[in-house]
Amino acid sequence: MHAPLLFPLAAEDPLAKAVADALAAELGDLEIRRFPDGETYLRYRSAVQDRSVMLFGSLDRPDPKILPLIFAAGAARELGARAVGLIAPYLPYLRQDRRFNPGEAISSRHFAQLLSRDVDWLVTVDPHLHRYKSLSEIYGVPTLALHAAPLLSDWISREVERPLLIGPDSESEQWVGAVARDAGAPSIVLRKHRRGDREVEIEAPDIARWSGRTPVLVDDIVSTARTMIETVRILRKAGMRPPICVAVHGIFAERAFDDLLAAGAARVATCNTVPHGSNAIDVSRLLAEGVRRMTLAC
Ligand code: R5P
Image 1 (cartoon, protein in one colour):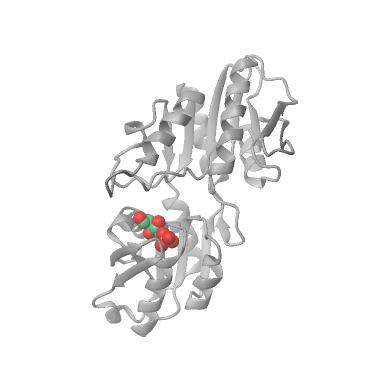
Image 2: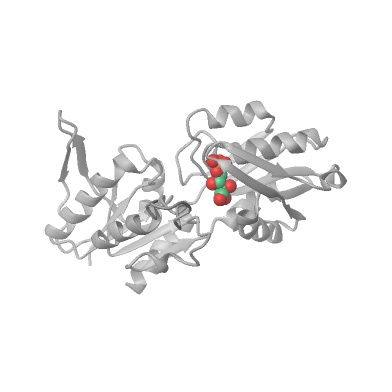
């Protein structure tokens, strides 16, 4: 029986290599390039017939990545792959999980339907499930959502003295509660009002009583960083120590990372689910273990 073939969708992807090593999978050779007119050219340079194929790629900034992914999955099937799985350390298009205004697309559903047509299974890390209880509500193929909370707890326990874990909003309660329990630290959850993509208000009543602790903001995603920036600002105003910001997925749109540091964050640590200079928490073993479970089940 052949080892599975893992194909990174991005040229330089150290996480793909680490996961392939942990799975004893073969790293496949897949050429993806653009024609001069902007269309995608794709060619498997490793034979996929009768092989178990795993496509690997973080899907932050998803739109330019999706067509190559769909072509890679379709071509692998046509070329006789036994199964085509997708390992997406960051899975996008989950926040638009209902029609907030008349006429809006519920993009989470359309995106899930699109991927479910082309891959046989999906493994990811902490998808942003808010109104959906699980990915199976929208995905038509087996999915596995892994949780980075224990890795965040380990990092915080190692790196931060007397932490107070802080979730910026009710949506973060699930991550913060789990991370705090594992780290044996107290936690609080603040109140957030989002008025627009970049307009966020945070309320932090009673925060001053925790002034002897190091605030650690914990969230699943940092995108514009407005949530963390406003929280840092409120905490600093209340006389708290400079906060440490920890997130699973550091997307950091445009100048978000610099703005967060400028707002007064002492340190920013993210998982390597999205490649970024703030990556400090490695998810390769978590992913490998999840893929092992998924491929045994499928
Ligand atoms: C909210 O639902 C999420 O948990 C994050 O708080 C949010 O996505 C962060 O977004 P931003 O960095 O744009 O404020």
